[in-house]
Amino acid sequence: MSARSKLLIFTFCLLLVLAAVSLYQLFALRFEAGDIFPPGSSLRSDPQGSMALYQALERTGGVKVHRNYRSLARQKVTASTILLLGNSHHELVTGDKKEISEIEQLVAAGNRVVVAFNPVITAPESAAAPEPKSGDAMTSKAVKAPDTAWGISTVYLPIAEGVLDKTLVKATLVEPGLTLPTEIRLLSRLTLQPPQTGWRTIYAVDGKAVLLERSIGSGSLVLLSDSSLFSNEALKADRQAALLVWLMGEQTRIIFDEFHLGVSEQGGIMALARRFGLLPLIGTMLLLAGLYIWQQSIPLISAAGAGSNDQAIGMTRDSFSGLVSLLQRNIPVNQLLKVCCQEWQKSFKRELEQDARLRKELHDAMTAQDDPVTRYQRIARLRAERTRR
Image (cartoon, helix red, strand yellow):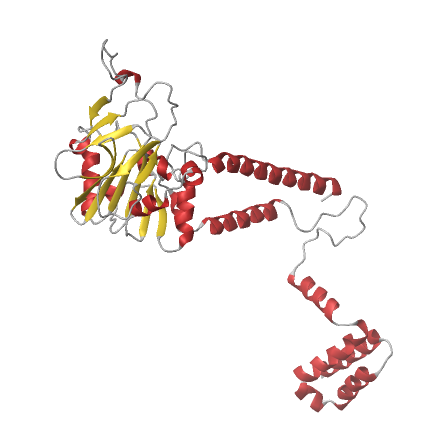
């Protein structure tokens, strides 16, 4: 292979490696922020994600934390805390009985399921409060939204004029006997109105619940009107650790569910390879396959040049030629006759015992320093004469 061809191949390989590294960096930067995932996802590192909480729990070492990309209804999950973050409160309507039934089955299996809704900063325009009549002392009213599952209705807190959208709402502890802060801060103006029985209100704002808990079987179901408590932004600016610890419960296994956010694991060979750690093996096999193809396409022994005088290059050799080449590389010229005589003595021992002249000739040939060709011809002639007798 010429130097020009080697340079072209090296340049092509270098450009290919640089392109692969650049593409990897591009995807790494794109996935690092995680803004391609929905709000509340533990794969997002921006203010709306919950990656900081996931990593913090992972580093504590006291609990096992992992993400779920498959339907929990098809898995056997027990004794775990399941976080369903970033939900829209419009999704859990009464008509969606399948999803509600799946959540209840998870709770009945002994799990603690926390359903946190996306914060509602302003009341939707479609549900805006009617204009107050003249003489009405109230300047704003609570707005009632459609009913949700479990007989719970949602109500938006009134928003006074001149109040910023992201002004925090203070909720007070209602349930006695809990070692929780007497007051927490929320971003959402969504409240949850439970039925008369079955639920207990943990925190409320002006008598309207924002945090509910219910026991089903051996598990518990928690509804929270504001999932921003779990966000990266909240953990940095307004961390409410005691409430988060209570929400996690006493389970030693915490599951951040990504499946309900639409982040699912696609089936196939590559998914199985990633799950069982076979990607290095596949990469090695591809590398070996590439080397094999390269070896088959490019000979390891270069062809003879245009002005080469070596007639041996490119010639087909048989087994005898290979034996001769092997002997030439391993036996010096001045030791060739001596080695031959030693082999003769081993192979024709009985013949040498009967012929003293041939035995003496072999002995002299092993010690003499004269022409080996003449010595060889003399020994061959003596053996030929003995054979004709």
